[in-house]
Image (cartoon, rainbow, N blue to C red; front, side):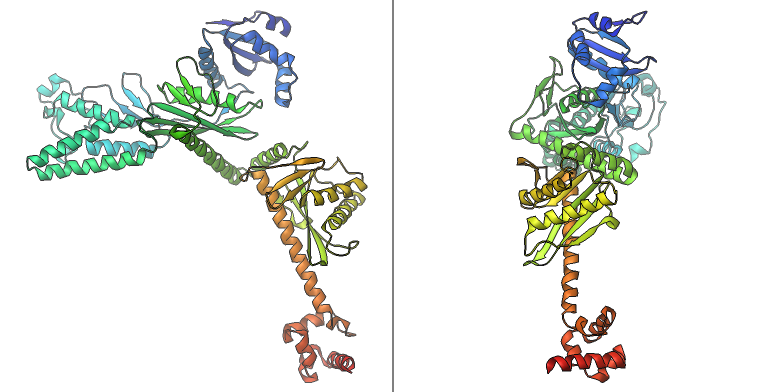
Length: 605
């Protein structure tokens, strides 16, 4: 392996031409010698050339390529070496345009100390002194639970004495409280042999790895032996330990016991990031689960993100597994078998991992929404733009809904969302003026036309997305209205059909189906439901007002305020009609009471 560095920086074309057709890592620098990007390649020359010969759709890639001034490369023996080296350089040098690993922190490990009569304890530091480290674990609570389990099964020392044979024989140590309460067998005073102590350590080592078989068999044999010797109290103690062990095993065994020493990696992603879950399985037990977020920089594919995450996580957690289950056929080198399960238990554990990744993603969204609402809005807008195939983010959206009952009092509602949230001061309702009868299509055309004619006349900003509640018919009506105003093609418009939540686009017979859990679909559904609620509320008010107006508003000198007072007191128009003058006077006064009496007397005659 060697590092290529030019003394004088030749033109990029020359730098590319001199690259070898070998596996390796390339590094891009700008004019200020700042590292922009680190990448790996099977053939360095071919991979680097592609950046300068292809038309890139991504704005970020175009920007990065424009900044490249100098190229370095490191040649390695195999592609696997390139993969590991790329990961190492990204972590140590944090290039601007590489994927960001967002969860670097110190994790707890379980340490079996390299010493005579080894201690077992929790630590956050790895010291290369020959000690064994299991982990890292993502939860301190998990490590402590495991420590409590093994200490309850096998008495081991907690003191820091140097238990060399000559020191024990010289009687340098005394028994402590741990011995007297049964937590230690007293190796410091030669009451426990090194061989017996190490057998316990080996059993603990197997349990930590997820192999419970030997420990269970050992305790079962010991319990039967003590019972046959009439040592029932001791047998009960062993039985209690066996129960603890089997309970822990039942809690940790969630898959086929034949699946052992396997790593599972899955990814879910959105426009901004990928979320990779890692599960390690030993002897049918999940011994580790961890999820990480990878910030996208250059529109990387899920396969690219997953491959980088696998290398990073296996290195970080010091995985020795020779087989990996994933969603994609990634290349991890010739020594690691990659399986993409299609069915059975293997497929189910991959689905379990994917579910964990999705839950982590949802939790991240909730956290961002609370802690950093601006970031949440930006991410949501980016997601909606991609999901709905828009040219710009829909920061301003409007949704229309018609409301009528058997053609009476036809009305419509327009609700406005800004940055994905209701802007209630901008809501508008419409009384249908040009349509007779229950004609949803004509009503939709009228309200869309009136809404945007007014916005144009008042020089108000137009929305980045219009949504109509309904299928192809209502959408066609909305498109016609925009066409009359010369706005067709200037404002994106879609229709949402209730039955299957289909999204229709103009001149496209095939609807778009979004995932039912999609945030984009949830925002559109919220807008549709809000428009329906707002429209129904206006429709109800209009019908109520019309019912009031039928008689009382026809009485000369009786206005809306007086009508409300009368109905509040008498509860119905019929009771107002039947009331005497003496009953009316306290409510509306003598003059108005007489007018009401005269009105109904005249109509009855």
